[in-house]
Image 1 (cartoon, one colour):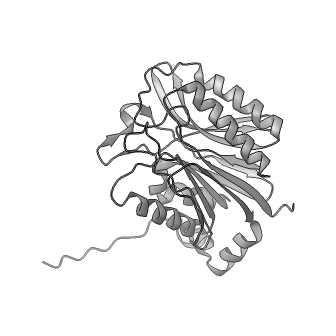
Image 2 (image 1 turned 90 degrees about the vertical axis):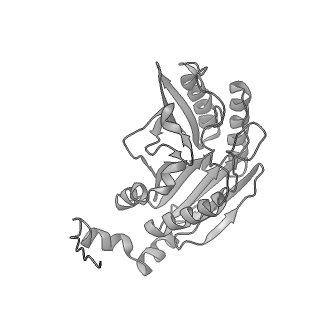
Length: 274
């Protein structure tokens, strides 16, 4: 495989109330991704326990326990694993995307908390502050979690720093228009950044209360949806082409234009009509 190709598997799985069962399900998903020839396994947000279920009984050492198990599995298989977890520090909780494998343990804490549509993630979760980019051969992977997808500047900032593949792990809420928004936002972020956008969601299941939309998808740097799953469990395995990213960016140089012209905020002219 050349350095300009990267094989990534999106593992759309359904999780429940049991921490132990969920960990086993995640380990099985990583093994499935490795068996499919993937270099990177991407699992959804909130794999420890899906949204709609309480976090207060989350043991403080559970994040470390999961990290050790996931890291051992990823290293044994020679794969990089991205898994959405909750991390507890005393009474504070963080929605963290764990990155592990190849003697690596990193985490991205969700920056934009889901305080919308009558839900208040910030009532339980503390927001992170930094973006995270992973360098893997010719590819730079910029990370996001769920509600981050609604904020173009989060991904544009990483694209301007070299990110050319954007990965979003989610437990997207259900509701009128939410599937259409999921698709549209994924396509828009891919176009904003002329990057591949890979969005992995939790599958629909009986335990969630209004979450678990499914429909994991892969978007081309030109904004075209290449692959999409349905509501249930499933897997998408894609070989990403680095040369294709270069071709799109040459034809649509929005990032280079931003470098040249958008460093300062524009002046605003206001005209009162009545």
